[in-house]
Image (cartoon, rainbow, N blue to C red):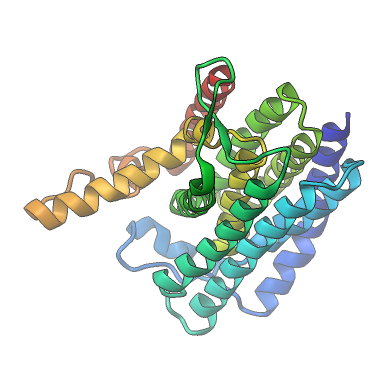
Length: 316
């Protein structure tokens, strides 16, 4: 019931504050700078308000706080999620104000994300409820102890999740919809292992994403920007770390693994052979340039995300 409350409140907040926030961003002229090397069809999206991730951040915080009765691990999840959102906000600001479509330099973002990951890892390692153990998928709850390596491992999980969601945020409604699906899968995971706080947090993230997709669905009235994508990736990482299911995140977040691998394969192939494997990476652009309508690509990726969500829950 508390998870339903957090999700419903987050959904309502996203829907209610969406129009005023979009209007405010429009007045500030915080419009998206579309990359010229992307699909030509995206050039018409230039000027659409960005930084819309603040809508989801506010909804997640309000929804999670309103639905939870205990505050042991939840504050850490909110802190890391908000921290990554602020990194993304700085990135969006540089992109919009300085008119640099790539935003902050990659090494600066990775350094800040890594620092937050170390903080989360240190908390998990020191927590008597978490420690250094990680659940191994498809082993009926068997644990593997990483020892002190749990701390850098958590940092790697955070960096991977944030950048995986960031790569996926390339089509209207794609990242928001897939994260909503992954969050509801994690709600089921958290409930099954008795972690009420993470179930409430997952419900809030899922509800916030659904509310945001209302405004972000094609044709998008607002983009989440790195403010949203980095925050959402961090939220998924927190759900995984604070339930000791980091390996299961690889399954539930299968869409983000696909997107990341497609980008790595494309870059490696071009550097080694001078040829591209995909028409464009990440892979959602490949399907788009192959003639599949943007809305169809998005819905099909939602379905794939649902498959990975169910598979991840079964792996637990």
